[in-house]
Length: 126
Image 1 (cartoon, rainbow, N blue to C red):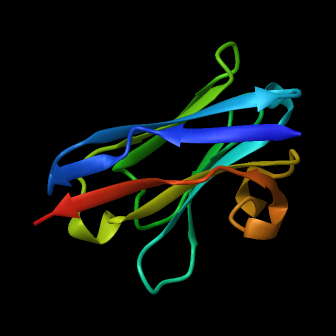
Image 2: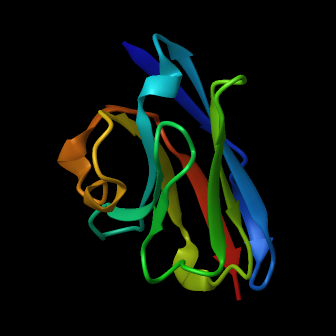
């Protein structure tokens, strides 16, 4: 079992930055690939970014590539999402998730993940 708790969301103006954190407790955090997803109102949850268990590989949705950076600190059992140049369309509830290690490019699918956090709200004003 892995428990995930997101933090760092809030209200920010367009062009601003936020860093989300996801703290994990439980077994073997460092053995999981980690991902960030988001869900805007009346929209389906969508993939944002993923990072391999070692941190050596990352993968991003086209909509955030070049603006968001995913990273992890296995010693702290934490994964991060640095979000820069935020846009109003980035407004959503952001979720972190843990999944079995597989090719990082396949980690865009929600069924690859076994554990989910409760989400943190990010609101970007124009």
